[in-house]
Length: 87
Image (tube, rainbow, N blue to C red; front, top):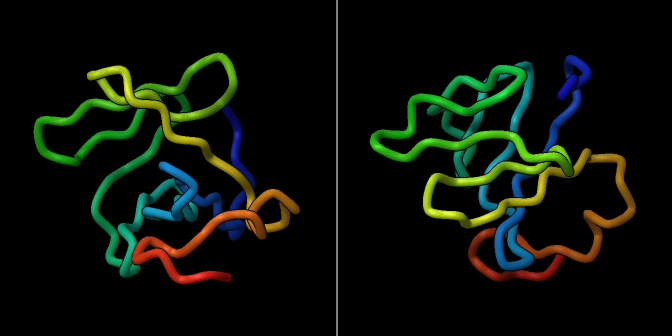
């Protein structure tokens, strides 16, 4: 999975933005950097392991899937902030 530099890629779970990837660093919902993203996985989130699936989304080791969409994708307007507020 190749991501362009200086573009936010939001991580979506249950239709909520729970974080974003910017320049190969994962930031949590309040914007704090907390993990490193490489082409195939996300590491640095404690005992949780994430890999990239065939749809270019993140898959947690327990099977939970997280969509990853660009800040310019029209689908982003259909999501909510992590605390549930509307966009």
